[in-house]
Length: 366
Ligand code: F6P
Image (tube, rainbow, N blue to C red):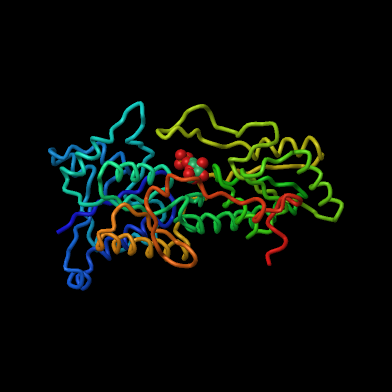
């Protein structure tokens, strides 16, 4: 009987519970058990790496607090809910100021985990890759609404977030049109503009600004004036939170950093809206979509991808192919080495996927 530990780390998003449910369903499938000649037990680790750092395996109460057995009956209804039923954290066991990685390793061993499945983005899977390098059996499942993980074309949460952006922009259009206003809508997207770009394409935004292309505010204002001249009643501008306005820095909400050294972004939409108002005289409003983009139930796509990634993670374990991240590439579920998650982030190729003249998606595709 092999023991699988499962955790979700970093920012929550829709699709995580689907992956957990399908890890459990696949691992505990009695038919497959017969075919594979091996059986599994599943345990949820609460609150990401925090749970495995904090647990005291010799203390039953502590184990109950941080680790819980997962059965098919436990996870049966999880697939319709967003967030993560396991809880999450931004705990970094490799934080150089407080390295807890040896504790993670000894706790994993004491709890009898043969493998841990980490569901997360660059930070969470980066930790998994470092644990792999220390000899631990790890499997990664990619998730981040930013879609910036290397080694996969899909990360859980992204399509749900794009659907939310689409709904919210539809709502803002009616009020923008009624008042003839410019609306600057700030999406998430720390280093990569995928959410802004695909959300902007889905909603037909007038201008889309992404972190990969530093923007000149005067140029944005010129485009708005051109839009006015062509008869537009209002303009929708989508800006990713990680954007810089030429000559400026990224906008942060304070100086505090998390365990991985990231500051909380936010404020570029407001900054840009002020400049637009000043330079064009337009009545301008800004809206920060913020954590709304990570809330609510998963889209159909995230439910299906969570299921596929969960099943694939157990396939790898059954084949004893440890140290891999499941991945989606060229329309297929596959896998890559976990270290891939530590590589260069998957960002928008502005020469191919962006039009620098109109600050929008490409106008020619074939
Ligand atoms: O990394 C994913 C992400 O959603 C980023 O786009 C955003 O900057 C960050 O998480 C915000 O995270 P939180 O407020 O949960 O710390």
